[in-house]
Structure formats: C-alpha cells, structure tokens
Length: 221
Ligand SMILES: *Cc1c(COP(=O)(O)O)cnc(C)c1O
Image (cartoon, rainbow, N blue to C red; front, side, top):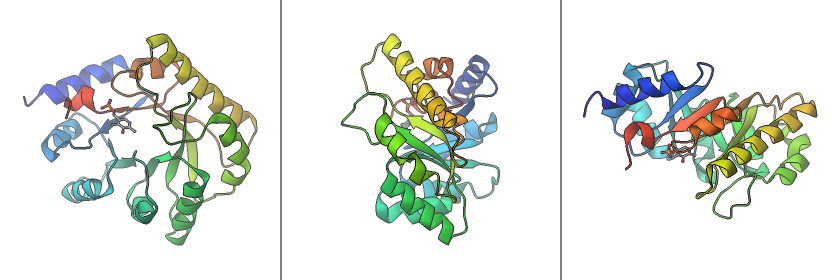
C-alpha cells in the first residue's frame, strides 16, 4: 500500500486552502506511514498519548523541523512532560489544567502555544469549557502569560447532520470572535483547531485554520 498515504495527502492539500494547516493525527500509526507523510511535506503531527508520542519523537530526532501537537486529555501527572515536549497543546480543557500548564511552563521557561477546548453543544462524553463557563474564566486565563493562547479547539459530538455540524463549527467561530472583541491581550483567538476526517470541509467553511486528520489519511485502526 506504499504510496497511498502520500496520494491521499496530496489530494487533501489540493482541496483545502493553503492557509489551513493540516495536522496529521498519528495515534496508533507506525513510523513508516509517518515518514511517508513527512515525505510529502507534512510537518505537523498530533498525538494523544504521551508515551507513544515520546517514543516517536525519539525515532524522528533526525528531523528537526517537525511540530508536535498534543491533542489528548491531559492527566495531572503527565502535564510537565507534555509542556516540555510539545510546542502545541490543543486540549487545554479546564482552568485548573491551564493554571498548572502555565506554572510548569514558567518553571521550565517555555511558552507553549495552546488552544482552549470548548463544546458548543452539550456532550457529557467530552472535556472542555461550555461557552458561558469560558467567558467567566477569561480574565484569569489572560493572566497566564507563559501560555500563548492561540484560539479555540473543538471536537463535535457524534451523529450530527451536516447542517448541525456546520452550525456547531460556526458557533465555535462566533465564540472565538466574541472573545476577541473583549480585547484581552493574551487571548488573540486567531486560530481555530476544528475539523476531523468526517467533517473537515465543513470546519474549513466555518473558518478552521487547523484541521486534525487521522483516519482519512492513515486508515482506520
Ligand atoms: C483522533 C483524533 C482526531 C482525528 O480523528 P479522525 O477522525 O481519525 O480524523 C482529531 N482530533 C482529536 C482530538 C482526536 O483524538
């Protein structure tokens, strides 16, 4: 099957605007497929398990231009390693976690780029802020100077129609715009991390700047 991954990536790149960043989500994907993706220009890889990611980072030590993104829920005891080993963290899903990451970043003299994970539709199975809750936490988040807060990230609940999907992505973009209007210095909200294999075109239509694609590139695991 060699060649199919690079083919798929090229086709996706043709379909999406050049300013939208494709992050290859490589959880449970082996080194060879990742190298194939790298070979056609992918420089952003996303992982959701710390140990698996650290092992891969070691295997890719020779390639110094890769940006590593952490996309999974972060347990307390993993936070330090995640701050130390990822330049992007998409899954900052609570004030408590943000505070911890900020402190750890400060201690290590790092400034990771982060997304605040939100859910604009109620979803008991997902982490993240609901809109009103997040608005209430903004003033505090604005003080976390070691986190470069870039924007919002969302994962939609399963089973939505295309119309519902688009409207949920638009609601996320609108929430980002509302936050931006408040003028917090440390909350520029210019990026939107949203869109996965099944819904990335709708996410882009709603203003996504980063899409996170796994299965459509690497197949189902
Ligand atoms: C697995 C995962 C993705 C990729 O999902 P696909 O449906 O395989 O494209 C994107 N974002 C997060 C947070 C994930 O856990």
